[in-house]
Amino acid sequence: MMGHGDIDQLITMLARLPGLGPRSARRAALALLRQPESRMLPLAHLMERAATSVKTCSLCGNLDTVDPCHICTDSGRDRGLVCVVETVGDLWALERAGVHRGVYQVLGGTLSALAGLGPDDLNVRPLFERIEEGGVREVILALSATVEGATTAHWLQERLLSTGVTVTRVGHGVPMGGALDVLDDGTLAAALTARRSL
Image 1: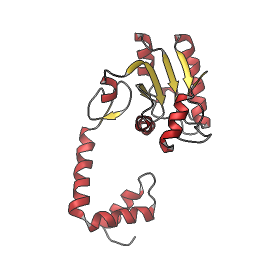
Image 2: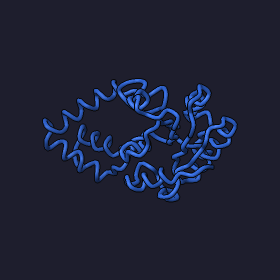
Image 3: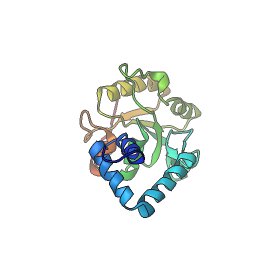
């Protein structure tokens, strides 16, 4: 590392963030250190606030400062249309695209024998509780086009079969091996619009 002590620790911590390697972390650290009053201290303050104020929504799994989250309490949302996603990043990507006016269910991952993630590790209970309460017409499986995503979609489809709700999956535009949170808005819109029955 180029610095000592606190600088090395800052670079090491930044390098742990997704998308930042050692070089990017050094550049980010330098940008922060060059303007500590206008960049570093406000960022540190916001991060400390977020660490205590952000909660996981007990209904859908989204991150927000309130529980239930703003999406779940929005009266303009169609509660009969539930979009199932892997991560909060996927939910945010769909919200950014502005193509889904229903509610969400964040699974928190996908089924993966290699990673040791089974059905009990997924946040599916609130989804089935919503369906049991009535009013859910359609469940959209907006899972990544990976082996794990396909396995999870198949597992969910089998469990939802007996509920009587329509189960669809995002269609065109999501490439094999692609993750939702890195796709552009147009691709996401096309994928959600072209969903199909399973």
